[in-house]
Every structure is written in structure tokens, then in C-alpha cells.
Image 1 (spheres, rainbow, N blue to C red):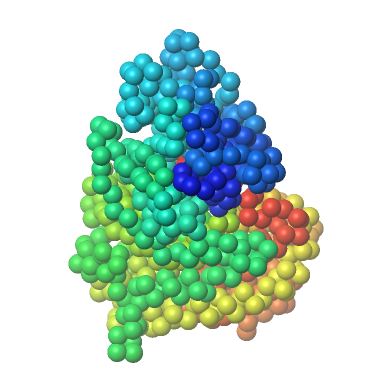
Image 2 (cartoon, helix red, strand yellow; image 1 turned 90 degrees about the vertical axis):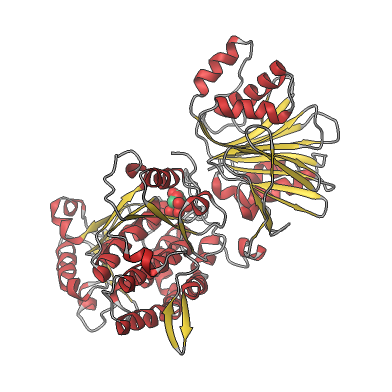
Length: 616
Ligand code: G6P
């Protein structure tokens, strides 16, 4: 939520800042701005409402703003409408302090009132302006250096933030601070780079420092120093990022979303290979990278899964798969509810937090709540070094690589692999899955990447079909059991990128209300991958068809009479039914993508959404 960049070095800062922001635009894109300093001169601040390209045009791709030290921001509005005035950077009236911010200052009104009593005036509706002016206030009141002024502000402010600030008296320096919002720093070739996320600086360096919670950093050209809240220096280790810089580029595809859909066979394979090893020609599960032993796993009697958005949908799949394979009770809950519900956490409960970014505010809070209550936590996380990855007791690192499109595809697919692997590992540790069954499941799991590739080859047919529904008003997705969980994700994919209202319904619930919404030509997508439930769902599809629905069937059972019922069918390759989500979701992702394309929408950056939601 909001993206921050910073640079200090020998090169011109503005083009580097704009390039970094372009990699972070998925975090917010309603306005953007930069502040650049040329030597001792006051920073030049340029802001623009709308997409980053407007800021780029306004600054002639950065060439119009001179200086080798600067900060930048791309905004997802929380306090104050999207406008040039509310865009960051914000500054104190005498330009003593200029800064950018990601997150929410919860007590901003109280702080604003305090500052007004001390003679400050405000030009924007943002909480950021309050934070910047509070730093200025402490800096002047106590006559301290930047680190102490920021530390005093951090103690006074409630909420989450990542801040990057420049002080008039300290040319060639940028100060950073964070609490709960991410921030990474890289130093290379006498230059220093900062960003909210790795892709912003990946093309400059793969050696990354993470600023810890409630820590600060001082950036100079080719140098970074970290401080704790007491102002004492702290030492940091470098984390080497294995991601390829090209992975954060479109590489010839029209959009990141379709590129990332195509990457799924590879990233699913990589994720499988990280936990399934060949031992004497037989696949064996190896959870050593996760840190969970068989003994640890055998000790858990309950599992609670908590997450947001698509990661929550993975949790719904996991609930079906884990309970069916292991008979260990699983509860799945959206993190924003879990954290405030005073949940019952019986002894020996493993709390699993699923998150691509590892920074989602509600998921992180749920993790902390679980830890405070004495539960062990497992993070299924894509971003190395993210807050959830660092705070969880055990970490399953998904290997999706950088995901840029706001609508997740490849990260979701790798999270499914983590969920299946956890189910198998648990079944093995508990002794409820035989060795033969485990081998059979793992062998089948290894076939998923090729089957996903086959489904992606269907894309032309799916594009043809999807283009017919550009004007649809409502779309419904129906399925039972795991198929219902698949529908949740299919429906979300469609609505978030195409702005078409859609709903996922447990097929058996259709008659309890939803069916009244079916009109002539309404598209209903039936997902049928579970043999036991096939005929039941077909009956529900027939019910809507006889009320005028246009039917699309996603099914693995070609020998049933689906084609007599559905108007358009995508057959998915046969697999173990526990793994069907990995295949059935592919055509659903493609349907969402191609409907959005045929409507001419900005597929990668749908309106109002942000990829990384670091506010609650
Ligand atoms: C946002 C994204 C979703 C994502 C959700 C959770 O809403 O648009 O695609 O599923 O956040 O994000 P996380 O990083 O925790 O997986």
C-alpha cells in the first residue's frame, strides 16, 4: 500500500526514482511525486495526480529535475482524496523536513491539534503531513539530529509506517524509519538505493538489507547505518535475493498478469522441488527448509489458517485437503476477522498464515495474536525477509518470484503446493497416510506443472469465449467441496480485473436466493472436478440453464454428459482430486484476464486496488 523509493549516489536521482516507482506502482497508483536535492540546495518537489506516467511526462522522464539525492512515492489514498495536493512528498513550510510515507498514522488528529497549538498550519488532508511536521517540531524543539527527532516522532505516533525523510541541514542524506510497513535498502558501487519492496531496487543489487521494526536508517552515497529507537547503531546482515531482475519485467507479454499466468508451470515446479526430493528414484517429502520435523507435526491437533484475499482462498482449499487426508480439524478464517474475534485456540494448535507479500497488515496482526496466545505459527510466504517470514516460527517459502500484477495468479498456485505439501507432511507425521499413498500423492503432484502448461495452451479458445462476456452484468460460479473453493478464486479473479459483479456459490446453496438473480444469458460457470459431487453440481447447472443461464463447465470428467448441458466446456487433465484446484483455476484466471482485456481495462492495476495491503 503506497510505494516508497530513495536514492543517493553519483547518478542523477530523478530517473532512478521514477524507474523504482514504476516497479512499485502495483502498491498504489492514484498519484505520485518525487523530491530531489542538488547538493545543498532545497529539494525540488514535483507531484502529479494519476498514474506515474503523468509524473514522468511532467519531469521529462526525470531529466528536468537535477540532483543526486532524492525520495519518491506512489500513493494509494487513505487520508485525503487522490489529488496533487495530497500526493507525497510532504514538507514542513520552511522545507526543513521533506518526506514520504507508507501506512496510516492512527492518532494523526490528536497530533495535528498539538501541532496547530504550536503554530503549525496544514495544506493537505493527509496524515503524512502531520508526521513530517511532527519530526520538524521535535527537531527544532530539542535541537537534536535527524535520528533523535525521528525517534521521538516514532514514540509519539501510533499506527504503521515506513518513512523516508530528507533534512535541509543534512544534504546528501536520507533518513528512513519503519514500523510494520516494509522497507529494503541496497548499497552498491558507491550508491545507495531504498524501496518498499525488492523489485524497486533489484536491477541495481541483489544484496538487500531489511530495516527491522521500530528501527531507523541513515543513507549516504554508498553507505547505510542502522539505528534502534534509542539512537544506538545496530548491525545488519545482508540477504541475497535469488530473484532475477528480468522476472520483474514484462518480457514481451502485453501484461504482467498474462506473463505470470504463463510462469505458473515453472514456479509450481520450483516450489514442489523445494520440498520433494528424489530418494532412490522415489519422491520423498523433505520439510527441513520449513523447519518442521515429523515430531513437531505429530504434536499438532488442530490447524487454524488465516489470510486475506486469494491467500484466504488457498486456505479454503487447504481446509478440504488437510481434513480429508489427515482428519486433523482445520478452521480457516479471514485475518481481519481472526485478529479481533478473541479466537479460541486450543492447545497444540498450529496457526498457518498465508501471504504472498508477507506484509499484509491483518495477516501480520493475526500472526502476532497467535504467537501472543502461545501458538506455533507457520508462514507460507513468497517475499523473502518480509515481516511474516521473519516473525513466524516456521516458514514455507513459496518460489513464485516477484509478482507484479495486482491480481495474483502464480503466487496463488505456489501457495496451493505449500498447502498440499503440508497436508501430506502432516498425514505422514501422524501415521494416517501409508507410504504408498504418500508416494502416489507426491508423484501426482510432480505432474501438475505439465498439466498446467497444457491448460495454458487452451488460451485462444478461452479468449474467444471470454470476449463474448465483456458486457456481462453478473456472473456466477458454482461448485461443491473443493470446487466451491476454486469458485471463490475464479470469481475474485473476474471481478477484480473486469469490474463485472460476480459471486461464488456453493452449488447446493443456489436455490436459497441466488437463483433469483439468474436471467436470460447470465453466465454461470460450473466447476466439476470432484467425482462424488459431479452429478449434484450438474443438476444445479441444469436448474439455472432452464432459467436462461449460459453455462460454462470446467471439468475433468469428459466421459460424463457435460457437453449436453454446458454451452462451453474446458476439460482439465485428470489428477488426484485433492490437487484439482491447481488445474481448474487456470481457465478461470484466463477468463478473468481476457474479459478485462476485451473491455480495454488496465488489467495489471485495477481501479481502487493495491497489491500489498499494509493498512487494516
Ligand atoms: C490484496 C491483493 C490480493 C491478495 C491479498 C493478500 O488484496 O490484491 O491479490 O490476495 O492482498 O495479500 P498477501 O500479500 O497477504 O497474499
